[in-house]
Length: 119
Image (cartoon, rainbow, N blue to C red; front, side, top):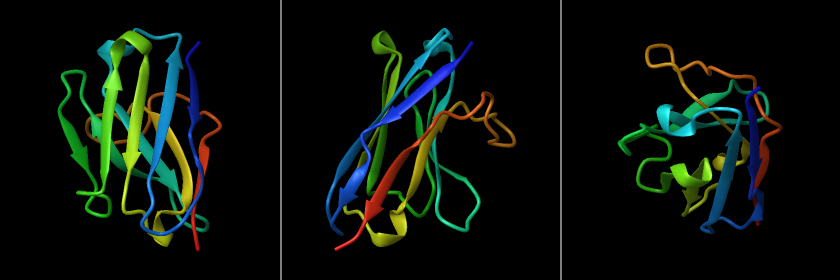
């Protein structure tokens, strides 16, 4: 059974930085493309960053140049380094494995980690 555990969220001022982590278990992690999604209040969940099993990355326009996704296959963990944070980045952040065509997640969601950007 796949388990995803996100951590690292918190309250940060605009312009600040945070590093999120997602530990995965129950899978051969290195075989999967992984992604970070977020869901802001009143909005649909969206995929903001994606990393292939070879290390190639893609970002949504809203976070490009500010967020960096990375992975450590030895630790079964995917990271999201967030910098130059804006209030509109406030959301619950989740990791999962996005399907290639639809970007919908393969597994059930974890609990997510709350990121709040506010002064």
